[in-house]
Length: 400
Image (cartoon, rainbow, N blue to C red; front, side, top):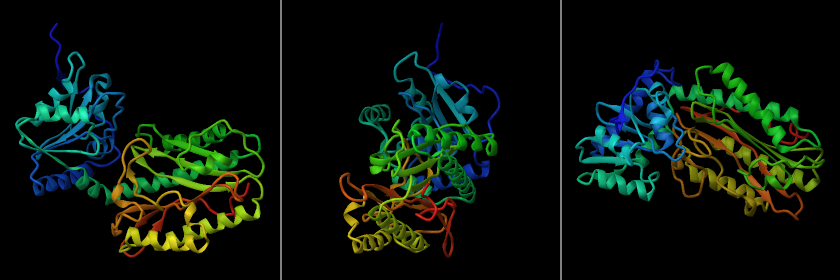
């Protein structure tokens, strides 16, 4: 039997994608303009975020490589045979399937689309050394350059369709937050409370976005010592009276990430905990007031740093004060050029979406020990910014 290295298969009908055909054409047109400006004949995307952004298809790697190849007249996803027809159904344009009958059929499938191109763009921040070496060997006569920074800048400015979806995500994050708050009680385990929030969000996504793939939504619910890190996983720890709590909901709709994060207490906090919490809320509100078109990320950071320093709390800050939203999550994607950090001088523009999320962590053994974090999402407009997070924050609302 002669088995192919790669093939095409249109199994079923095209699925309804998260955005219109016009949206995907606009993204590809903007990319192709960058390709002209940077003298690239073809771009090979390998990251989950860029493949999803330009094709609508969010792959599940499981140790296998995937791609989206864009030329001036084609857009083709490259997928593994294990997925068969699903990548084509979920891709805006073409799809080529590679088989695993022979090693490196993935590269052969790429070559079939790239052809004799001499100027190729790839994502330097995504390819590992092994795959980079295979690309160099497969396209040995081509000049390979980095397209990742330029595509990140394109993704940082959201379209009207993207903003609609992000607002939906923020709404569903709040919905999950309400389910979590209702499940908080002494003796309940972190994992049980987290599941209540996740289930509520997935059910709401299924109800309001029935054509989307239901995947990847998650919750981090932390208590006591476990609140010291923003990304600490859920455990089976049981809640105790007086615990500091951290509520974190992350609904994922068609690869688009949104978040809600709140500090809560089970029972009245002690005086020092309340003082630190109120200082973090003050920083949060200052940050909300500073998000507007024309503001520079590093300048926003400097002002919040001054506030924390005035409370003698700056040394307890754990990370930057916010970041971009869009096609990203905890295991793929990041728009590092739009983060609220000292080393980022990006100026906010209409269409950008950014969070404000100050966090203080007081080490165990000190008064007020624990991690304090509030998180809202803002859409930058022409004259101001719209806060799309509705869940209340602060001691007036979140003492259970």
